[in-house]
Each structure stands twice: as C-alpha cells, then as structure tokens.
Length: 332
Image (cartoon, rainbow, N blue to C red; front, top):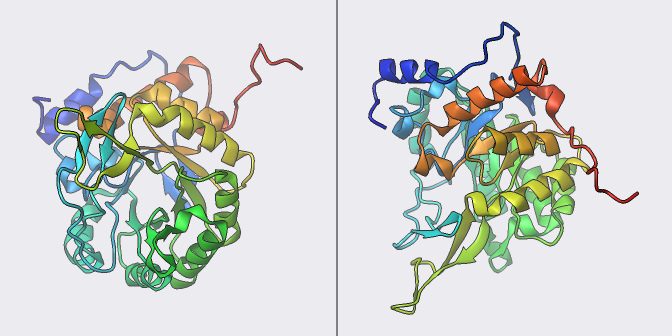
C-alpha cells in the first residue's frame, strides 16, 4: 500500500464503494458488557500492540483492538524460525513473546487509549497464580475495556497439559481471573480438544462474559530438502483460510450451547467470511492472519458489512446473528 498518511488513509476509506441508499444501518454490538461501534476486532498477536499498524489501519475505526498476549513478566519467545507459510495458511511459533504487564501499562496503554477504540488485553500464565496476578495488575488501569483470556497455555503445575483442554481446568482458571478482576472477561478457546462445547460451557459456568473462538490449530511443516522442521519449535499454530471451516463449525456448535456472546476467529479475509461467522452465531469477529497479506483488511470488512445490511434491508448487524437456515437438501 503506497498510501500511509492519515489523510491519505481517510481518502482511501472513503473510496470504498457504498450503496446509493440513504437507509441507515447499525453495526454496533455489545460483547460481554463492552459496547463497540462495529463487530470487527483486530485479533491478538497479529496486530502487535496497535501502534505498529496505525499507518495502515486507523485504530479509531476498529470495533476493538486486542493486544498481543501479555504475561506477568517479559518473555523472549521461541527460537527462530518462527513463521512458515503453508497451503491456505500460516504456521507460527512465536512463543508468546511480549513486554510484560508492567511495560504494557506504562508505555503502551497511554498511547492506545488516545484513539478512543475499546482496548482488550489478552492475558496468559503458566499457573493459576500467574493468571490471577496478571489480571489483578490490570485492574483499575485507565483505558482498558476488558480482558481476553488465553487458555491454550501449558499448566506447568500439571506437567504441561494445556489449561484449555480440560473443562475442570478451564473452570479453575476462569474462576481465578474473575475473582481477580472486575473487567469484562472474554475467554479464547482452543480448537485442540475433543468437544469444544464442554469447554465453552465450563467457561460460561465459571463466569466468562463472552467467548472468542478459535485459537490456532496445532500443526507442523517440513523442509524435504534438509529434512528438518520449518519451525524452530518444530510445531506451531496453524491460522488462515485453511482453518475457517473448522472455526465455523465450532462457533455454530458453541452457539447452540451457551447464552453469552461469541466472537468468531479463523481465516477471515473479507466481509463474506465475517458474515458466515455472524450467521452461524458470532456477535462479532476478529481478524488475524489477513493483516499480513493486506493490512487494510479490517476497513474492507467493515464497509462490506454495511453494504450487505443495506442490500438485504437489515437494520442492524444484531438481527443477523444466528440466522442460519436449514439446508434445502436436508432430509427430514
């Protein structure tokens, strides 16, 4: 993209084709108590700390911004190589590198809150105690609208088993964070489970205000010339269009089992992708890997959602949530 000034970005946004209709439509939604002007969020880990993308995507236009995963102390992450392109997607093994909660509070949040977009901090830990301490550290910090809880991390107290794969562990970690913070809490679910609905119900029972799904699928890639893994960590998280069908299925399944809002994630590259998630039950969506391909994708998606509502005479995006109809080919 050649246009990188704020003035040029504004002109670029206005250049998107809008339907010649005076009908007003609303993209506003509420996710677990957080009111956002549109249902399109920047996903954790793909948008940095926000400032990195401000030259490409005006932060004030986002529905919400979710930070990189934040731990109690800074982390250096995994050894390189950390990224590998795959058919229809990307593998990453960043290792949750981050600056730690103290520096986030002191250096990043003051800059981000100036944009007026709800800021949701993604947090994680390796023990229940760490999860609680990170959440407690963010309590009362000006500019934070809510927390997103990454439960795909290994529980070091239980031999490295992921918190997010056991409904009992999910309940414990969500309950610990809820007792440590009054902020709205969205729990990000791992797809690397047998039945994601049980995980979702456990998070809801423990007090989650919303759910986001899915996190990445575990995968790997091999260089056949060297016969070595393409990632320094050997395995990594698969994201991008390749995982969209899995993500859609899981959002649809969870929507039928919980009452709290769902935020859909997984391979969203355009407005039609986002609409699929909304129709199967998501109240909002997060865009991740697409940022690496087209940094202005969020603006395209927001505009596309507005046009769809006008085209289909729908007043509000909320009226579209969970409107999936039975297939005409379904055998009764």
